[in-house]
Image (cartoon, rainbow, N blue to C red; front, side, top):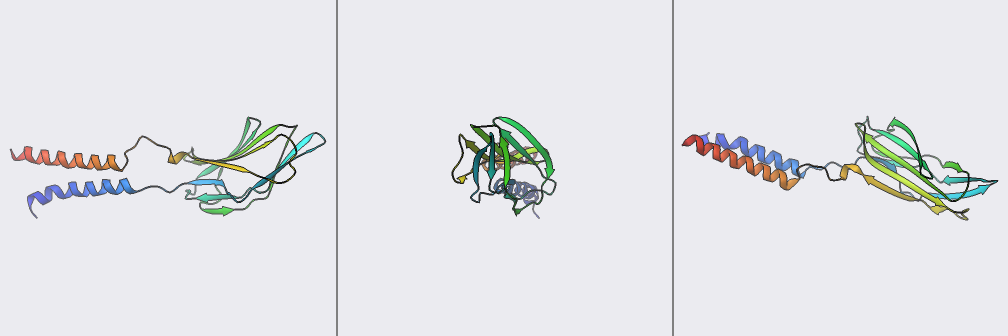
Length: 182
């Protein structure tokens, strides 16, 4: 093998490795509300308002077996956290029954939030928000919102940054080779 090839082969492998890192992306990781047509009702009986959510069905994606979750009940701005618990499964869906909570009167805002944690860090939040000012006469569609914290920009090299780093390494290798020859 020629001397030039022996010197440049490791640099070329490093460049290919860095470029392969730039194209790899992790799949979303979550335990979130399944958007399956959830509905709610609000009913006032003898001064107690009952909020009923049709189901608590959830979906999972690409979670490690030791991932955790918390359940957050936010009643008129006051949060009560339940958990953390280890996730029931890592991928797929699970069906849970209806959920009922009570309030002392109208108006009310209830946020039913799930936080997915990996390594103790929240990576995903999924929330159902229910607002009631009076009794509902029919089931109302529940509003679901999701925030993927893992998808948020983080200070890291993107594909162009990794390619530029690889190019810099190649240039440095060429400079060192020329300096050794002189």
